[in-house]
Image (cartoon, rainbow, N blue to C red; front, side, top):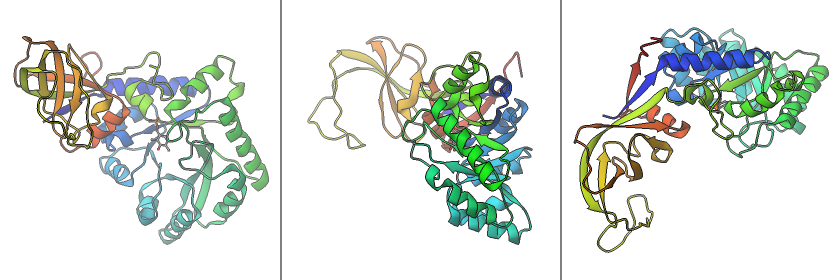
Length: 362
Ligand SMILES: *Cc1c(COP(=O)(O)O)cnc(C)c1O
């Protein structure tokens, strides 16, 4: 079975570096656990590293972490109408963009005699979730009238679907909307959540000019930068961070010298593609027991003298160079993962999750 090795002390370290960095400018951090299937051990490492909240897109993951005893404020990143009652009972805060959803949350909050806190997401150009700025004031008017719903903040999400950068203009726009909403409704919003791991560049540029430009932004929701040590706009490594807290390991099932050109009449491959090949003569080809069922193969990087040639549902085919080399059947090949590969591997039932303690920092 392929396994993913997870070094919790490195995740804790990354979390602490980011919480200190952003905290110096008054920005709190939500540790985003969705790429880990809501792993309680990883959430705990984030809490120990200093996050004030754990945020996940799935209420099932939040239930899993709560059941395992993780103590923090839980934030639901994506609200689903049919889960409204479970959300009210399990999430402290949810992000929302639809009045139908908010009315349902209000209904169940009244029924269970509790207050549910919400952050309204604003559409700032990335075209994933959010209320358009021109409709925000009307929207907020309805939200604050809902019984047992408490509006605690505004947020936006960029660099996810449309590939739009969270830059100084976007952050200033969110700050200005905050000020306008507060003035119009005579309220104070506590959480202004400016974005995700793609906001690092904005922050880094602003910080070097003093803290003026931070405006009202006082929270970020961070998954990738905590887990993989990279910002998410250009995938640059953040100084002082571990980038290999996760490693995927698979077992060699075949190792043979073979021609580099397929032979016979051509047809489509198993995924409907018509692949093209370059003749490089005979090569050492190694197959590992890993495939598209386990991870997103295109986001893997292989360690050692291998090159990834391709994959099918259960096989990754590697080139190990000139004919005549080779490695033993049953030996291990290691891969590092990007965010997509991590998400797929952590949520695959076929990948064993193994926590490794680091000898220096167990
Ligand atoms: C997944 C998600 C995040 C975390 O994004 P990263 O780039 O991994 O930091 C933040 N906010 C929302 C709404 C999300 O869905």
